[in-house]
Image (cartoon, rainbow, N blue to C red; front, side, top):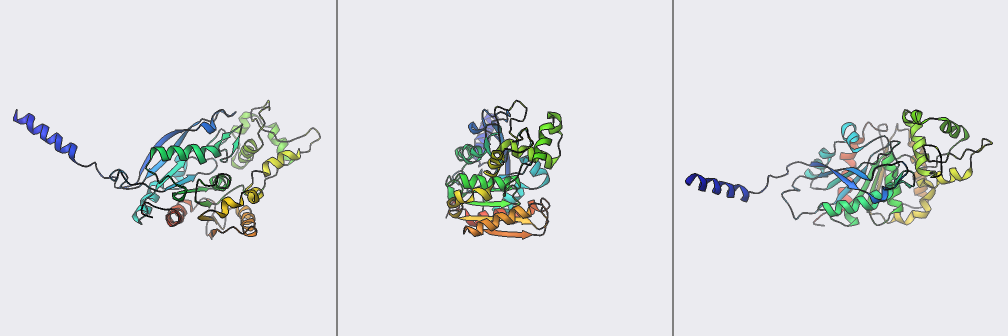
Length: 339
């Protein structure tokens, strides 16, 4: 009897003890359903993998709410691939918290059948833009202790994700208050030439599946920006190639209509109303020219932004830049619990 009483007292004491503190940032892999992506012709899944990194102390402070930074990975990437090769997500959140800026980091999977839909919207790939701006933000606010306000919500991304950052922020004002573009691609208009169109038209599905990075990227952007639901082929895209060997101008106009440089005047207020706008790129990056044209247009239209050209190429300093520059930028611009 005495043993049973002692056991019950010990159990009661254990239950009364506070839960162990979350001493370091914790990664949780979630599955988020996106109605926006449903029904696409590529059969890209609407069940999207999402990395959510909560800061130290998240568990032991049940009433605390946090600002949120969303990060969009690059082409041919995923949250897992970026965590393995580019960015220590948990380490970056730990570093921000140690500096007095605890925040939640969210990294959604933007992969598609052809390695990336460029966070764009169309019948072939689905509405990735709507997934990021609406489905994902709503789900995170409903399931995590966020400060559910644009002033406490930031958007960032690298390469294809840098493009996605500009696109989503421009076309969906009032969701994010600050953005940071890292080595962004696809800012100026791309052009489909007859030679490119002929090459794509001749490719089999197996050849596309085995295409190298830049060749497949050209196909992926075409699929996202020049979709054709009536296409009898497997791409469900319109190359614009005519029987006489010329390109239908409408195809290149559609592609250009997805370039931030082209659509900037339409969405100027979205950028000028941001609380914070920054971008960076390495001085050896192959995307330098597109970024130069983008900055030139931002300057011409009077958009305020921060820019840094650093010593590096397209990927070799992404992790260092993210923890040392991107998250500190959001710590400065996003409103926290006591602000």
